[in-house]
Image (tube, rainbow, N blue to C red; front, side, top):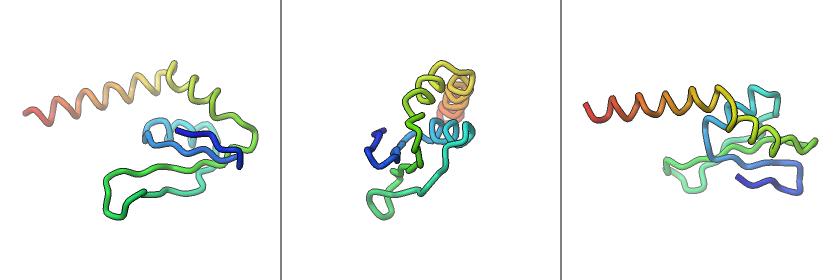
Length: 80
């Protein structure tokens, strides 16, 4: 996750990207660094420099706890 001087932010975590979108940051694009790769990242327009504040807010939020529980359930399913 890198904040850029252009007023854009690159995010590689789906749950954080969803939170930023929910909080009103505009999604500019979704990129795959390598064609066919499972990796991806989201580019958000952040002209007011809200990213760092929203990132901390996310990590202290119920949304993060929800995301952790979803991941734990997915792990449980994969082991069955």
